[in-house]
Length: 101
Image (cartoon, rainbow, N blue to C red; front, side):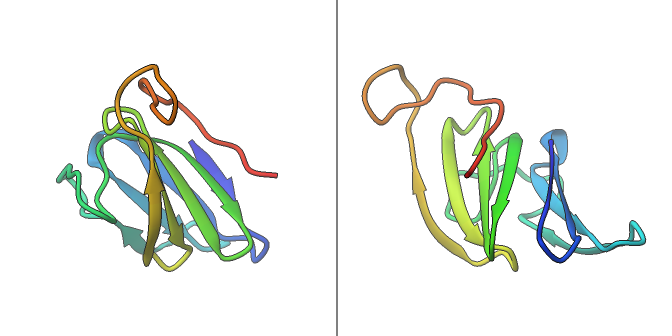
């Protein structure tokens, strides 16, 4: 999944690499959010990121295997999270994408 911010930077969810690459307007990776090749369940770590959305300076990441959504700054600073695996209130089951408005 991909998202573009208002400055033209592209955020690419790398599902199997467990990270988000941020590319500039020329397609050069300028930073990686998360640890490439290493899944995790801690704050700011990802387990198969499957969806990304950007709103202003906020980045939202849906994690397929992590069954949660993390809210970070576009520079990668963790802010909050929600969701656990399941089908009840406040739970997510293998989310594949996210959208903000």
